[in-house]
Length: 457
Image 1 (cartoon, rainbow, N blue to C red):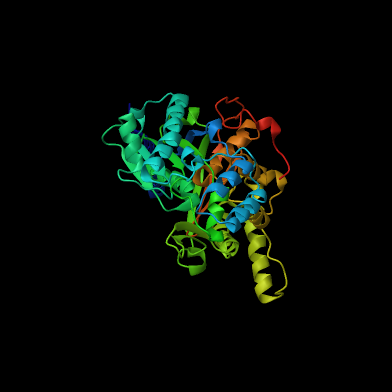
Image 2 (cartoon, rainbow, N blue to C red):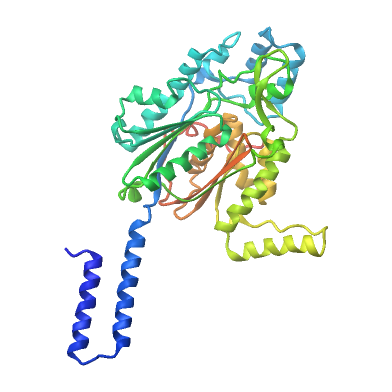
């Protein structure tokens, strides 16, 4: 079979012969045909160099065992028995829990149910295996793949970075092939899950016919804080167990089996700004106890980071009319009326569903305010926070799972996954649903409780 360039050349030669035979010797005909020939060749080669689309074939979220549930009463009772906490610290954590938006059915790893909590390295590795191994097993089973089929492995965990790495632990457990490209992301906060998918997408654009898995989790036993400083005690109260596995591919056959296609991604950060850099910061307290500080400037830093990030994303995905109104409102405020409000672009004109950072109710509502989102738009984030707590880098996939089990995601819908993490850094993914999501997934962590939601929080 002739290749396309050869075919085009054959057509040109045939036409040239025809013109000669019919005495069409005017140079304009030859010029037009040769121009068409070069244009066709250029178009063919440009298209052949374009990377194949990247598909999100499927994903899976981890549901911890019931024995790991931690009702408020158990949490406070255990905290009061730990010598490292004084009465004021216990009272502060109790108040934080009540106002956190968490339910009585979130989970903590077994190491943190001990008195005192076990926070040494061995327990952290056990926790990682407890979360990541079942996620990997079920994702491979669900997609009918073997570990040997995986070409790229990315594991992200912000606070725990053992040696050998978590990705090496996975490769060793599943005897994966020797030339697998593995990456381990740490210290990137809650945005690491979306950054991992962005990294996988970039790798798949440069390596043809490959399959990638991204595993996202946060190991809580290594981040537990046993001190008295209130900004560091917040992490104990709102962060909970969770993990997710995401399978991506650029193989041609993936188009027919995948749930979603990645159509856009964007990463920005403000680590160059001290306010953003120190907004969430891991450091020792005055007694030398390591913990993560949530500073009072956090919401301001988040707002500024989101503003610049959303502006860039909007310039790439919003229709011209929305961009035009936004620019005009900025010019009006600067040049005519300083009291005028800046027009907030309506992202809902191009995006139907939103997976937002579920770091806490104040942050969710701050993001919703900046994007003009309604209660239904932020419902998945609030319900995920309520049922499972802040699961750091894996929270977004529980939100998407919530929407799937509710049968809200339709073919052609766009989903905006907005990652936000320490630094402060932002990473957005825009997904397009390729088929109706209506299956009843019994293995979903939402399957046994979805009838209870939504609830008022």
